[in-house]
Image (tube, rainbow, N blue to C red; front, side):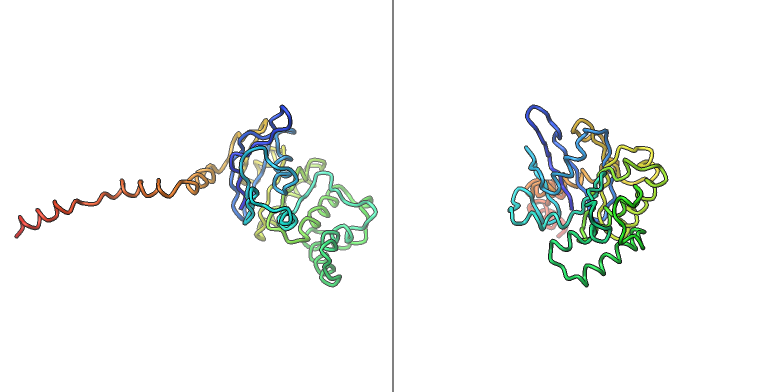
Length: 260
């Protein structure tokens, strides 16, 4: 689903990502961990094609970024729901109006929008909050609205960038539980965080980065699968030939002659 192949990102004389290499399968829940400035937000920007890598290749589903046309970028972004630490909600719009925004941009019918909002309010535990404004909500509720809005387009991938960074421990646990339930419905979830205590409790896959480099992947099998997939066909043919050598026809004929 998501493949970063030796991806580097350089701004001037600063290397933000250095030969980043990982593969995330459909339906996975992955924690992207590392301190502030490690490169987590850069990865999110690369995923939605907000920035272009200096080196390397990126693919998301059917989209190979090296071949991606400008007109295809909006379609790519519909596949990736973004949840931000600071919510990025419009303060002068209600909860329902904030959730409806991406649907209105696509000129969805009002009946369809209303149904989607109702379903998302229920799924995120925001029933009865549809006419509230952001200033009337708690920190946890604001994050739930952000998650609901990110899910409005029914994306295949949900990227949550430090969604619990400004929340207390109890509220943070509730948000992570919501993301886990969303993942159980089949959505690929990537959660960027530096809260290692919370990460260890969930026992999900962890990709740890630091100073722009991949430090640790708790599922190294994923990396080996990528390398195996990239192996040239001619090399595979050679391996098969070595593994199963054919018997010379001469020896077979001599054996049959002796038996007769």
